[in-house]
Length: 129
Image 1 (cartoon, rainbow, N blue to C red):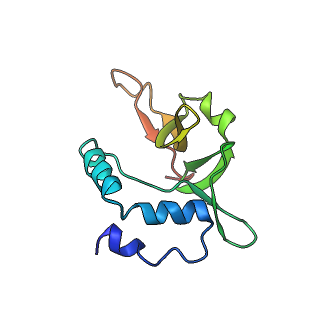
Image 2 (image 1 turned 30 degrees about the horizontal axis):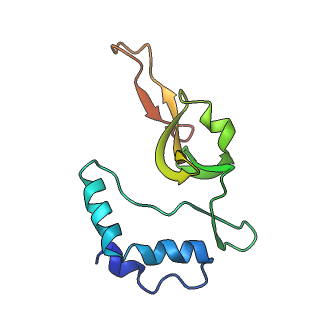
């Protein structure tokens, strides 16, 4: 089953901006961009959040970024994350205004001092791993 066939008809109740995103994956120009991105190890995703009380999908607001830390995803203030390239590795981008902006990041830990030539960053894992 392809992504295109999985997304067909699964956009019930989405806000208009996210419905547009779900529908767009079917467009030939989006498929062409996806093929080109795949050559660089990139893909397509839909920046979003859920309303905590209802679970409803909403577009991801500019002031938030999705953060994966210890295998859990949360939303954090964009300006708090943007100034910390030593701690957060961008893994998703969105075009905002005039440039690309990280919309999803992974929290990293340094592995410096373990005999490597330079700092080795690793994904932050849950405590005890």
